[in-house]
Image (cartoon, rainbow, N blue to C red; front, side, top):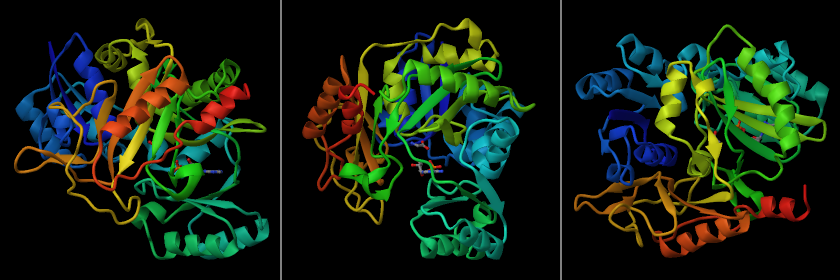
Length: 428
Ligand code: AMP
Ligand code: GLY
């Protein structure tokens, strides 16, 4: 039996841990730093997910059979390289492959070189040149992206010249995201339904997971500020078998074969289904959050076996199947999120394991207080997740969970999955 250490502390990590806990090979699970809900399933250690030395020291102490590095920052910083150098078996790409998310300039150049469909773009390091380009293009909305990681906040969709110029100054001149925005990408604005496709890959074989749809805006009807994601559904009805095939031929396979870098782990394709075909909006070098929360409950395979096969470059030998039906996840967030938010509220309606019947409750921002009770501690607090034979029942089951559990002043969207349902009824 295997002991696993998972690095990270959000809903995505909770979903990974609950799936690993189902594996017939897995005995004990450790997590750093974890959170209140995760601590019911894994022994948690207060080591930050970006503290490479701290994680190495913890791994040396615990001697796990595998270390799963889930978040983007430690992957881009080279945590997998450091763990492998110490002889640990890992899940996650090395730094030279994680750069596909770590640098937008790198990923855009890769797509250009290998003819992978994406938005037209230019790269800038000087604000005057960027502004001159914006004026010359005079096309709005304009999309302005910081090159490096920026906590998911590095993309500005500027509605007019004034907003665009402000974004350029903030990124390049004021270094809003530090070094991450010293270089920027200005790209064409694309339209169409968005699809997230996570994939397992060992560098030789790529196995797309079931598709999903995120809901990034804070408020109903896709209004309000951008967030880390307010809910997800799976599968995404816009992503037909025909489109999946096109993506495999024009996007997934060319990306896998693109460079002399071996990507081992979960490669995430953020796609937009434009009138001119599917295009890549972004790559991520890791499982999506909250996509993982609706994808892993649909997996009909042993997650540990997949991780081990990826490490051994034997992914082609694993049979990966998906359950029939659908899954929906509704994020319950702290009052005020995604701006300044309030925490410290008691969690209600949860059992001893931090769960409730009929749902998976994936904890993102909860902790145990001094009396061992679960209280809110972050922006996104829990993802209330349920499956169903149809998308409609999955959504209804998730919202039934939302009625039962929560905390004071919880903020959540009431329309998770509605756009997907419309797509189904109009047979897109
Ligand atoms: P990202 O942080 O890269 O996931 O981008 C955040 C969101 O910005 C995406 O999910 C899209 O909704 C939007 N976005 C990014 N690039 C474009 C683009 N070229 N055209 C339209 N929307 C975009
Ligand atoms: N849900 C989007 C992401 O994980 O980046």
